[in-house]
Length: 242
Image (tube, one colour):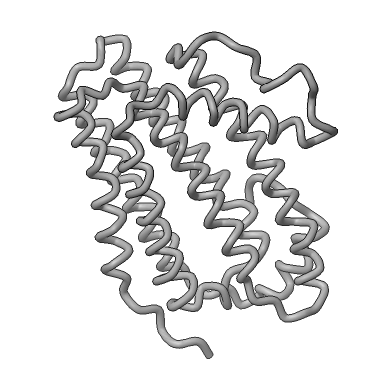
């Protein structure tokens, strides 16, 4: 039996601290709402990076589980990458980030499903070239926050023993769909009102509260008793929702 899940004050503090960084951009660097929304889009890529690490470190009971990772990890990268690419492409056009260009970096399209990675790469380049220089600190803060949570909860908290490939394949989609519908709706509303400061502050505060809710829910779940069965089923059935 695994030891009882311990409290995670360090990852919680890192989460709150990283989410407070946008306030610096708002008050000292005069960020408007489009940079706040794009920062949260970049966070999706950070989440994906650590999710790939979780999939790689996941403990499996059978050799087929490790073999399955060789297929599921690339599949996740292409599928989730395409999902983020379309989302990001919509944002840069809606908020008019950079100059209008094709989503492809060159006239040569990448082979097969890798075209989604090509689109994602093009979107990242465009967003990164248009970002305010000081946004790098917010990105670093979010990266460190998710990194602290990965080490404290997933590795030291031994969540890699109780999670499943099915859960790891689904969770990032749940986060991006729920959070970014709210963030995008709020961002559009704030932009229509010419980015008033009080509403931008409310938008960031709502994102912090939502992150805290997801964090608490994610790391207070009971261990899965049927992990081995879910791992086996996940190789044959992959979906976006449970």
